[in-house]
Image (cartoon, rainbow, N blue to C red; front, side, top):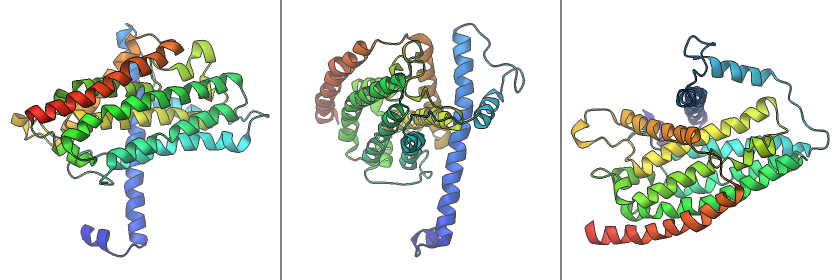
Length: 333
C-alpha cells in the first residue's frame, strides 16, 4: 500500500504523509538537541570536576534544558532601533533551514532515509553552505560593530574550512565510486573508509568542528572579544534559532561522519545480529562525544592561527589525501 501511495499521482494524501514524516524527524532532532546540550554540560562538568545541572528534573538535571528553552520562548523579543528589520528577522531562518534540509539525505539505516538522492553528498555540501549567508546577514543587520565582526569572521572561517572539508571526501568518493550516501555505506561492508583514508578522516573531522563554530574554532562567538559575536543583538526565540542551528548541524555533521568514514549502519562482521540502527547510534554518539571532549580540552585559537591552519595545514593534507587514496585504490583494491 505504501508503494502504491508513493508511485500514484501526487495528492493531498502524499502531502499529509510527507508532512507527518518531516514533523517526526523535526521532533527527533529537537529531542536530540535538548539532551545533547544537557549531555555536553554534564560531560564538561565531569571533565572540570563539577557536577553540572543537578536541580531541575532530579539529580541528573534531566529537565534543565527544557526549562532553559521555556525561558527563552517567553523572553521579550527585542529588535534594535537602527537594525535592518527585514534582514534581522530573516537571518535566523536562513541560518536554520539548511541545517534541517540536509538531514533528508542521511541514511540512518538501510531502510530509513527520507530522500535517496544520487548526488546526496553534493546536496549536503551545497545546501549547508547557505547557512553562512544567514549568519553574515544577522551580523550585518544588527548594526553593531561586534556582531558585524562576528559575522565577517564566521563567513571567512566557514568558507575557508569548507574547502578542505569538501576535498577531504574525494578519497571516499574514489573508493565508493558514487556520490550516493547509501552506496558509500554499502561500500564499507568489508572495511570502513576510516582505515583506507585516515588522512581524509582527520581533515574532515577537524574541518567539520570549524564549520560548526565549536571550540577551539569559536572565533565568531568569542565572548572574551566580541561579547557574543554575530548574534549579540538577538534575544528570545530568534537567539534560540541560532543555537538550534548549531546543534542541528552537530547532529547532521556527526551523522555524515558516521556515513562517510565509520560504515553507517554496517555492523562488525561477527556482530551482525545487532540492528543497523543501533550500530549507527553507537558510532554517531562516539563522534558527538569526541566533539564535546575537544570543547572541554582545547583553548580557543587566535584568528591568524585559525586561518593559517586551514590554508597551510588542512588544505595541503586534503590534497595529499587525494593522491594517497588513488594509490591505495590502484594498488590494493
